[in-house]
Amino acid sequence: MILIMISFMMISGGFVFSLKCKHLLLMLLSLEFMILALFLNLYVFLMMMSYEMFFMMIFLTMSVCEGALGLSVLVSMIRTYGNDYILNFSLLW
Image (cartoon, rainbow, N blue to C red; front, side):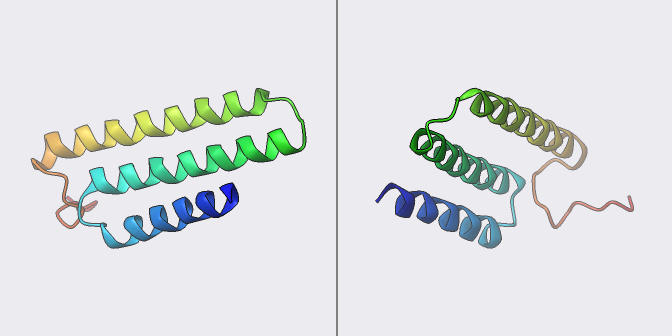
């Protein structure tokens, strides 16, 4: 039952990521939702196999770094362009 819920979380996060690609903030939130689903999947796997939980701390550290990097890109984009629309973002400017 829990694996069905985790797979539904991953599918819904990917669905939102592919549909709401207009705003960067919504894309970052859907990526964090998928990372939360991966974290739950990792937790269930490690509990079933009775392994150590040290790798979960490394995974959380990397996901926090990814979130901070995404927010810094969001702040930089809002300061440069005034909004978070992906379609206004141009690398050639």
